[in-house]
Image (tube, rainbow, N blue to C red; front, side, top):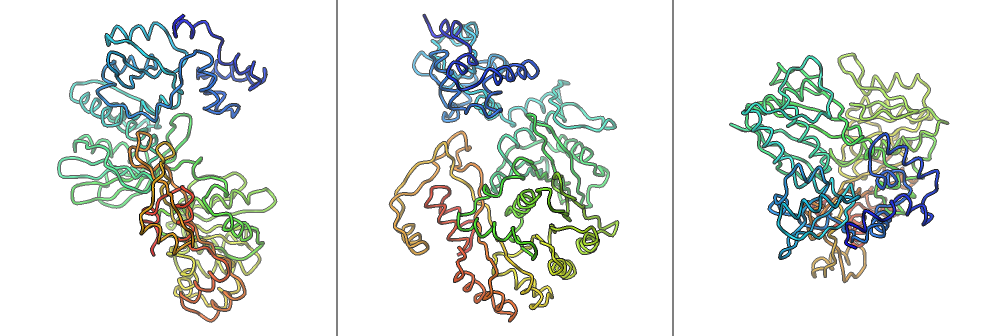
Length: 564
């Protein structure tokens, strides 16, 4: 009996899992009912329900069909290999060529495998076919990578000149907008590609005769696509009108936002525009609620830092500042904190610009300077609402700082962000704004400073022997001898960068009696930092290097993110 005959006569995956005791009859029935409504694969439904893991599914798929399972993300699949089969056949049959070995074509197949499709591959290619099982989600990720935005956009751009039409709607386009569907398709291709690559921002940069599309992925900018200038103008107009912006105004800076549904997840896009010498530049910030509202323990703090952090946010009153440059993850930390504090036993009010996400059980107020609602005036009004906890999106001036400190003096826990490089700079920054040292010393209970660093890709992580300089640096900072470190060698899953995802590195200063005295005396930066370290603070640099030794990130990332 060949592989295909075994696949067609073997028991179904749900039955195998039921026999093995991995799922109950009720769970299977629930999954089958969901499958009738969504037409999803049963295995993927069970994974999304949290009943089985992807590795368990792979194990059972092998048992079901006797066809080996592979991790398709670990293969570097070339365009030449993929082009051996028509794109529409690949997407319809869910069979993807992986590599050619002599007269054999190896293909990844999403189960269940249709023997007729395998036979079609043999007839199309004239080669023997060796099938492997691949997970549904992995197949879709590789498919997005293989048939990437550049190829899709080229086809759509070509369609503009030939009268073709192509549309994949993931945005809600206003009824009043009359644009070619091909432009909508390009926008959707860019958005879906950016989401698939975990980009945080998309930049559309005008040039003399074209427009460059660039993504920010894990904090680093990458070129993605070049679009003809006339098509880019239509594309920018569509994005602006969807975001509620004035398409007639091309010089004055504007801001807007829109939502898009992609793979059953709602993403929020913050859009900003400004005129340049070559035309209008547009940037889109991609916000995912799943990534923004993460549990506190997943922010990336070391165990001893997390203990201090929990102590600080458990205090009934006082003020805590979260500091760092733009893009360092301050908003994510603040949102994680207030989400964890929203137990229903306290009243929490936020003042933000803008409100990034609506959080249940929390009152959120949007800054509106035209209506007279600034951080300072809004904060004064909030105090009349009898809150227990207040979050201030950003302290920018003396007036806001004073009102925030007064609020902490009157029995409120205040959380606020501030632009400083580290925790020791926090009291000095506030004093320079004009806050009285004695007021600050009696209300400041802690400061948290952070950066984001890239994480080594788990798919291509490998060990290496550190250089003499790397060993000396780690010995100097941590007092430890290391013989092995980790790095990413580069693979398709991380676009051959060696990194995938980011984590936070922190330093957390709890203001004790000694620090309070120094702040009241207006002590210099060095004195405050020295005392904070003597009181047990782990510096951001040491926290980062600790993560290097743990194999989470690399020394080059720490050097890039943190000053010596």
